[in-house]
Figure (cartoon, one colour):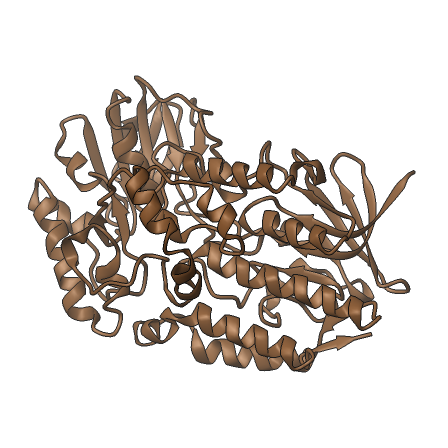
Length: 490
């Protein structure tokens, strides 16, 4: 069996993986990236369902390490569709000549540490075996399914918004049931309602919504935001969603009513929800579609006519809180009261990056044969979310105890992490050392700090954490400048 020797393996070819591959190659390292998808794009490739959209402004959702790369791409609208984000990532891969170092349609299945050499044995589902000094897991978080089916047998297909590559499924003329009320439902429903013959939404937990104001960008608008590159580079890291900093205004079509008012959520929340009720064709629908309780615990989403579709005769709304699903039957879904909704297709919706680290799907074995998935299953531990004690030279970007993706702009979070990892590897090489490993004491200190700052994200701490990415970046930089005191270098 041939074993290929590399300096580094990157797992994932999304926002983090592409940038990490670029930075490590710039150091002259022999690097290869792997991704199970058929093209680059990471989560955006998998979440290619109709209506998939950014809830952050396009100008802030770009890499900020190169003004030339930034200026040579132009968004077509303020809040780009998911397919346009995919095209941007393909543009990046091509412009930086990354594809020749990426193996697509290939899943990493095993990562085993050789303690004597301090290197990793990496195996893929295509039978490849690699020997790598460093492994960087840019695997992201597993989508969290809004609802799981209970049992029974359905005769038609069951689709999932987290496994829906662009253009993969045609729903035209079909009776479609959409399960869940999260961001994917909000985006999918108004996009497909005119294509299907009948649409039934099985609602769970409602979400706060504002109508998306999404003007088309021409040359003038593109030149305007490109000219502000230096300003954006310095300020985006201190924003929650990448949107321009502006006072909270309910009707401006952005999430500023949420992000700009986290310190005074009561008034903003009532205004958002009053506006939602005013959009509903039947006031009785508010009990199912408009949230109650604390505002600001979860992000406000942007929609394009989601609430209005429930005034149509060909759209049904089922409140699963009061009438849950009993089982699947061949013809559709049967509720607890015996009602059967006849369907041709069932769509399960998932929350973007809402679940555990996808690295747990890989058989990762570190020092002493310890299994990473089992350890994180017992307790989420890491240092800066970038490394785990017992796993030298294994770096992570979306691991437990990092700023959550619903509280920071994904591109900003990942750029901070990827740049730190690249610097740590370069510093290790410059010092003539072989391995870098998080210490147990360093983990304890980071866990205590994380819980103090973020905790379980109650409303009271939301405003404190709004600038958390900037503070997280500063803490990462201090760690490197101090010579990595939370790590053991050998």
